[in-house]
Length: 223
Ligand SMILES: [Mg+2]
Image (cartoon, rainbow, N blue to C red; front, side):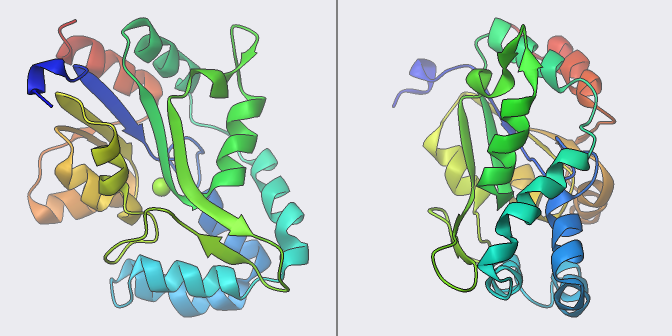
């Protein structure tokens, strides 16, 4: 496709620790399977095992009857301020807002359905949601990802390639966002992701909440 035919911008936003104020996926795993997290999380963060192996091993060790309690965990977690305002800004400027998560898709759907924008579920304003789907039909959970590749259970860069734009924008907070952050044209980073990008010597905009992102984008984009 000719570059000029592409939409000017597209936003790719992480979920856990980005839309939620804490890493819901990790928090939930720690609640449901603390011993496995002690075993695998330090190795994942230190990059001694891949996200793909580590997250898969943890999920596959959780009995399926725990699933509904796992999803309910997210109801207690506060969201980061300004999400509605950023989604509103994106939609007013015809910028597709994609949610790309290495966490559990049902959890993302649950949160975005409960959030309202103009009295409508926020999820109606979201262009797409890509995350790990869970098969609960067996004794233990089984993760299903259409975008499993390389070291990642959800290869966010592959998702981004599905929705090309002249300028891609990524928003994230941790190691699952590292590859997309390195590949997006504009990157917003906080917490652990900012540290990884400092290490890689990659430029990014630091963000505190979604108001920071909206205000920076309002300056950057020329619609
Ligand atoms: Mg995250």
